[in-house]
Image 1 (cartoon, rainbow, N blue to C red):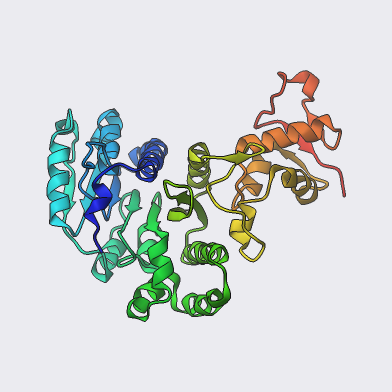
Image 2: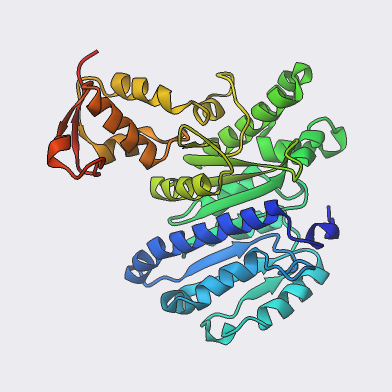
Length: 370
């Protein structure tokens, strides 16, 4: 499925998407490169549906943003391998010209590789054999053809490998009711999950349907090895309905924590300082999404209950508790400051011994028994 009009102009969605990916690539590379050096390995960025590189208004799409960040960093210039793929030869030709026009592109040790491969089973088998270097994958298809749980499994299976999937929600939604594309839906959701989902969504309202579809995609990615999954919703320019979803998949909590902070800053709204991640309110029928919508007030009671009777440092509270919840580190610190001020917890060093309104990572918290 191809729609060249997508690249006619840079929409707010495409700009935010590109910024999230570029910011995470930068953070991921800075964490991975020192470890890769010790192992005498390179790193790679792989874009399976890369597009033409620039929108018709001249704005840079994700591949150029990634390359510019690599050019500006000495270690990345020496270590980074980039692979850009698109089935559309017009796109790859345009991308090739856009890359050539980048200032100092010749300083990259490994010139960007550009290919015209259809994403499917053959590519999955190839990726399953590549395991020697850490890789960040960006998957941004036009529709659903080529997206499968096996593809995601193959790209995250090795050390240092994370995946960012960006997809058109409405095409997935329509595909669930189209028997002609049933094999693609089964490839994405898994056959058992797909069959169950088909029955559940028949009587659901559009809002409920969206929540359970994204919940099931996220849970399938967890099922195939993506221990840490974080979804982000995009709405259309008129703020009326969902256009796309971006889902981050990782096996490491550090990557998850970094991406959560990036997504939080790109969220267009927040409640009590808790980032919205652009989702509408969810219900307990979708446990992962429900946790991503609980307000800050809920965090107080959760901490008092979940850590009752424990003596624990702030950083350990955060790392043990924030997965599959929308709270960021600042939310935990603010909540602990409030609980301390209300006398509901004991803290060492105490507020009088710390700088005003601060709560360091190593501050020790003693929770009362409930």
